[in-house]
Structures are given as structure tokens and as C-alpha cells.
Image 1 (spheres, helix red, strand yellow):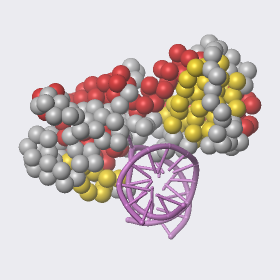
Image 2: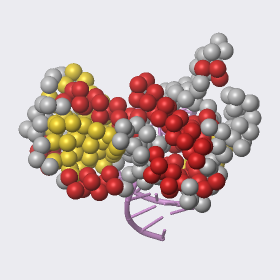
Image 3: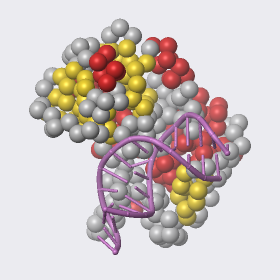
Image 4: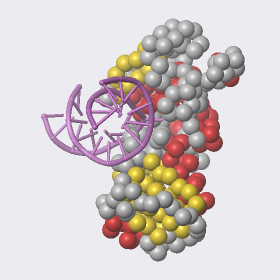
Length: 268
DNA sequence: GTGATATGCGGAT
DNA sequence: TCCGCCTATCACT
């Protein structure tokens, strides 16, 4: 379920399955029929992720832009594909494989200048080799708003969602309401480095799992606690439950329109 | 069957 | 600050 690691994983899968092949595209749901018709017959040059945005580069200045939003998902498999159900916005087929997209927030074709404009409004992505974290730091060091708000702002850092926000602030002992300009360069660097570590591990494992071994219930002989996202976490969605490190009840609050979770003892 | 919930985001108020 | 969108899942009846 989609934070940046999911999108990078999808880009890798689509490169592996489809790059270099001419695609067939369909829209069983009908809402992307025109776009599917334009993609059909084109060769996928490459797929890439920037934050939570998935891009397919086709020949002839045709780009596919997908944003999964809260509900979207991409599934793939070996041909033959399952019967297309009416919720499938886009089905791609080639090279003995298929991929189905359903429930996306965005699924559209863009030109190269439109792709450039999209990239221009995104901050550095911890999962991209070309990321320049100093661009994020320049925003954060001047900001009066809480660091928790800044981490979810995709123009500051691209790809971080609500789970990684809560978990990286816990792991780096940063109080979430601390104004960005009070964070300091050293703690920013530590947060960035930890995001790179956590999100790379998320790409590798295909799920978010942030609990270090020494704190893991598994390491203490108990079954790992898994949330609906499939991994193990310190504070995300654990309001009222004891902190895995100090036992203090985890706090939950609303910041902006999003839920925020933190340990008031570990993060001060 | 129904209702609550969700890792996102943009637009209206 | 709220609403709407798009879908799946799970705890309930």
C-alpha cells in the first residue's frame, strides 16, 4: 500500500516485465480508454518513480503518469491474465505478463514538459540516486511549521507517507511538533539517512518494517506484531498502546488532516 | 449485508 | 478545516 517504496518497487517490476517490449493497453473500466489506445503498440523505454509518482516513458514524447492515492494498487502476473473486472482502470500486457491498475488517484498521459513540471514541484526522494537532500534542508531550516508537517509535504521530501513519517521521527527521537527551523543540521542529516535506510529496506521487503532487532518482540521470543500494512512499527497506529521501548502510552493526534503518532517520552 | 477505516491529495469553504 | 474521490478489507449485524 502506497508510500514511496511501493512505487519504486512497481517501477522495478514494470522495467523487468515490460521495458523494451511493445505493449497492449486496455481499460476494462472505460475511464482510460483513450489513453490505453494511445499506449497500445508503443515500446516502454523505462519506468521510474519519483516520490509517490510512477512514470512510464514511451517513445514519441508519451509519458504515463500514475498516482495511486489512498486506494490505488497495481498487480501483475504471468499470462494469461484473470478476467478483467470492471474496476480495472488500465491493463498492460506484453512479454507474457500483465499488470492491472485499479483505484488510482491519477492515471493520465503527459508530455515531456508536463513531466518536467511535475518533477519541479517534488522535493528530493530518498530512494533516488539523484536526490539532493540539501534542497530539503533549505526548506526545513527556514520553516516555522512542525517537522512532522514538513516530512509529509511532497515538495520538501518526496515519497514519505504517514507511516515513514511517524517511524523516522520516533527512531531519531525527534518530537513531531518541533518547528523545522529548530531541528538543526545534524538531526536533519540523521533523519535523511534513516529515511534512505528504511525506505530501501521497504523496497527490498515489499513492506514497511521499522523495528530494530533489539526492540523486536520477535527477538524476545514473542510473535511479531503485524499491523494491516504487513510489517512491524514502533508508533504508527499504536495510540494508547505501550511504547515498545519505554512503555509510555503512545500518543495520537490530528495534525493537518492526517493522524500523527509519537512517544512523548522517547521523543523530546 | 452494513459501516468504519486506510499508508493521498486537491479543491471548496 | 472539511469534503470528495476511488477501492478493498475487516469487524460487525
